[in-house]
Length: 108
Image 1 (tube, rainbow, N blue to C red):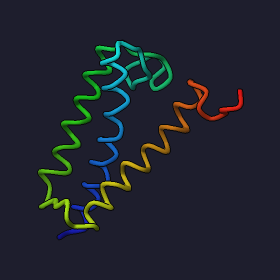
Image 2 (image 1 turned 90 degrees about the vertical axis):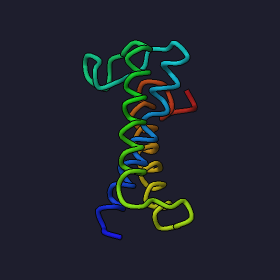
Image 3 (image 1 turned 90 degrees about the horizontal axis):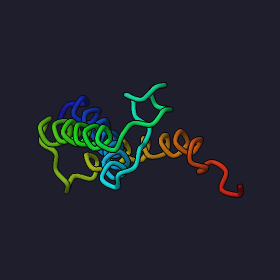
């Protein structure tokens, strides 16, 4: 397996993690930050925009994980590659969105 398959799995995992808050917030009818808001990533986008953005992220994650190479859930290195993408984006999102939702300072 080529190195770029693992890179694809990493970014697929990152997009999978990114799909979750957008899709769930949208399904709950809540506005949430998105790249389409003003200012991008800081302003709020409608729940409909977030559902669409989450679905797009999910579709691209599917392509990067399932259509590139031969991803196998029983291969720990491949799963680790995708899992690291999920973890890295989850941590970056926690720090970034925590500024807006109080997650960076739970004592207040």
